[in-house]
Image (cartoon, rainbow, N blue to C red):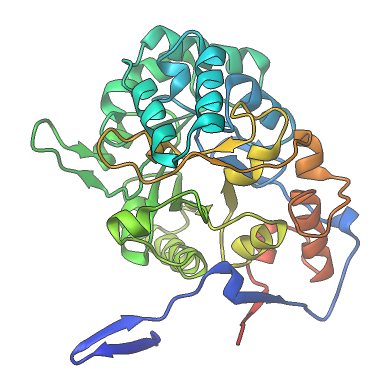
Length: 377
């Protein structure tokens, strides 16, 4: 039964939980971390770690996408980002970094980012970025917004994209637009020969609707990161991540029964900054996590230690700030697999996940989704 709280006469609200509100319960057995697998598979594509990058230019360039792929994850290029609009991205990023160093207010940097994103998307630049990743041999993924999915997807597929991410703050099965044709996600996906991951979803109902479109995966959340995103302040919208993931996992279970066996992956995007939070997201039912801010510390990250999400560049209502996210740079391999010299869970992210699984006796991600949980307090 849902935990409803009365917030006034005739009005109730559901109690919900962040990842930091819960803890993983050890089981009766442990095992060696050498016997643990963190691999997962999305459609025909296998990945050795449950990592999908949040599609922001702050952490993903074509080169970074290749590096992430070679380390076992999936790097996602933003097909509406700077690499799609500017041929001289290094100069553009330098301008942004310089603005961040000199600006007295965060809004000044946001204006620079908005200006940079006002340049038109150029199909040839998108094709160039996709081709660079494809030629490396790693899996190629790109993100489009619901508003531009129909327009951009043909060029992305022609360039060699293998997994398409349709992502916004909130994504529904049908995006209605007064000034154009609505995007019917079900029809859109049916016409494609590549797997589509869609989101963000925040509750059971939306997740179920997205699963029924034929999506191979559903993104839960919108990339929430403390001090970076401001969707809750600007729109008043948000669901604590632990509850949102559990709800989406319940939708996946019911959809599996409804279809007689079609499995849709759940990707958790938001509120995940440490290795412990990665483990808790998987324990709540996620198949993989989308990481943004934690990867900004990587020396390979194009943002030079800055972080922002795609929502920062919205021309009229930005919902993310450009912020310093890393005091010192570390290599991407060290960030993901260690060794680590600190004890705050920001390095060796997936080595720690493997250790958490071993300490609780689970050998793979699917099993680990069944681990016991408790609520703090």
